[in-house]
Length: 201
Image (cartoon, rainbow, N blue to C red; front, top):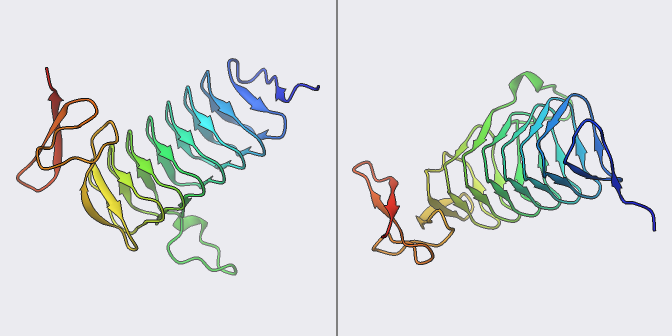
């Protein structure tokens, strides 16, 4: 049986499947795995301990932080920044132009989209460009994001709306705002947003 993993001297400690392509210049951190049929374009930075699933396209000029998981069939287009430990579910979509036309060049109009640390984008969700997904926010499967998402917000629907709060551990918070998984505590601020306090003793 032939070796399906390619040794690439540019990226020590990185596993790249033989069916995938990585252009120049690209930086990839150690312990990252790039699976089948992926294409990483120039100007991309991928952090350590990332998992890049099958049939993923990244770039150009995209930043992926440490510990991110990009599931199958996701395209990360120019203008996108994923901070550390972001989860992108299967076939989720990121756009980078608000009003595309095939016959009008809009490369100078790409909008920046930032997904903050620990956020989850559910399967088949769509994030319209120019918006920010807050830290540890949770975008439900199939939701369409058309506005800024607060930290810890649970967003569902088309267009997406907030229906609750999620803990850092990915559990929906009840009235006490205490995570049922790890005991971490939260509180609503005067502006109606949520903040993390600390873990229970």
